[in-house]
Length: 271
Image (cartoon, rainbow, N blue to C red; front, side, top):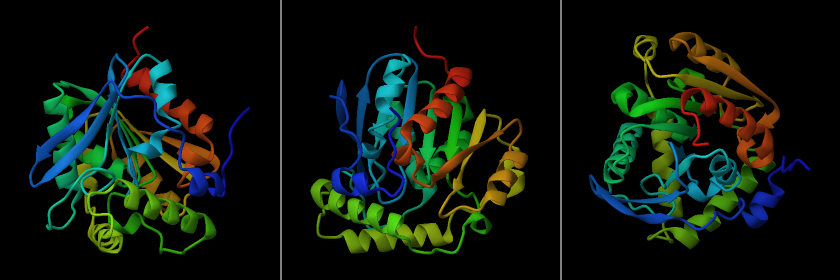
C-alpha cells in the first residue's frame, strides 16, 4: 500500500523511516568542518544530499529502494547540519560542494550519481559544473539556481510541522544543540543571497540532469524549473503530481520510482 503523509503529521511525530545499519561511517575533515558520512550497500555509488535545516536521516524512505536496486548509498550531513560541524564563516553552496568532494576523495569514489533535494540539489549541480568527470548524473529536486526562481515565503501548517521536526533533530544530533536559532539564521542568509548562476553557466553543464518539480512546491516557481530544463543541455523535466517540496516524505513510492528510473539510465545498478 502506498504511503501518504501529505501534511507531514507523521514526519513531525516520528521523522522519516529509520535508516538501516551503515556499512561504514565516520567524519572527513574539510575546510574548517567535520563532515559526517555513512555508506550502505555495494554497487555503483549514489550520493544523497538533503535539504536546508535537515539531515541525511530524512532520506529514510529512499535508502531501501536504492539498496534494492543494487547500488551503494552514500549519505552526507551538510556542514552544520545533522552531526556535521561548521566554523563561523558564512554558509555557501560552493563550500558545501567542496565538502561532498572531500568525502568522495576520502572514500575513493571516482564517480557517483547525486540525488539532491532543495539545497542539496543546488550543491549537486555545482558539483556537475566544477567536477563533471566525477558526476554520473544529477537528480535535481526542488531548488532554484538564481534568486528569480524562488517564491516569496509563505508559512503553512505543513512547513511549520517540518520546521518543528528539524528543530528537534538538530537538538538531538548537533554538536551545538542550543544554537538552532543561529543556525537557521545563517542558512536563511545563504538562501536569500545564493545561488546566482547565469544561463551561460547552466549551458556549460555536460552531465545528465533531471530537473524534478512538484505540482505544489512551496518554495520554487514552476517557470523556473522549465527555465532550468531548457537551459541545461539535454536536461529532462519531470513533474510530480499531487505533492509539494516534501515529496520524498509525503509520497515516497512516487518519488522513488522517478528517482530510480533516472538512475537506471545514468548509473545502472549492480545486478
